[in-house]
Length: 116
Length: 111
Image (cartoon, rainbow over all chains, first blue to last red; front, side, top):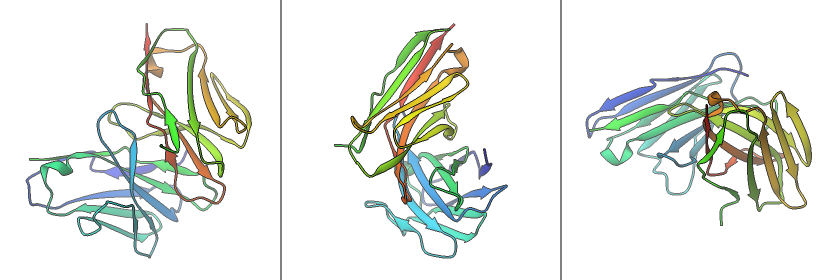
C-alpha cells in the first residue's frame, strides 16, 4: 500500500504551548486528508477533513481554533494543537486519500501527544 | 446507536485457530467495507476491502459482506501470535468521503 509518514511519532509539551504534527503522503497525491484522535482502547474519532488548498471541515464538537489544520499541498497536511492542555493528551492519526477511490485511504503511524 | 457496531473483545484464541470477527451496520448507503489491523501505538493498516455483498480472500484472510443482514465478517485462518492486534471494521458510501469505524476488536493469539 501507499506510504503516509506522520511526524513526530511522539511528543511531550508543556501546558500552554503549541504542537505541530505533520502528515505527508510519500508516493501519491493526497486530495483529501483526515485527522483522527484515538483514546486508549477506543476507536478512531474523526476530527476534521481537509482538501488541498481549502479550509478544513471540522466534526461537531471539535474546536477549529484549537486544532488548526493546514493542507497547503497535495502531499502535506499539518495539525497544530494550540495552547495545549493535559486533556489534549491523546493519540492523533492522519489519513491521506488519493482521488482513485474511497478505499484508497492510508494511515500514518500516529503521534502520541502528552501535555504536562 | 452507532452506525457501525463491533464487539470490543478481547478475543483470545490459541495459535493455529480460526479467528472470527464481525460487525453490524445500520446505514444502507454503505457500499465499501474495510478491515484494518492496528498494532498498539501504531496507525491502522488496511487489510482488505469488499464492495457490496460477497466474499473476498487474501491469503489467510477472508472478508464477507451480507448486505441483506447488514453484517460483515473477517476470518483469519491459521492464526499466528503476530496476528495479535486490534481489528477495526469500517464502511463508506460509494461516493462518500468519510470512513465510519467500528469500535475495534482486540485479538490475542496465544502461542
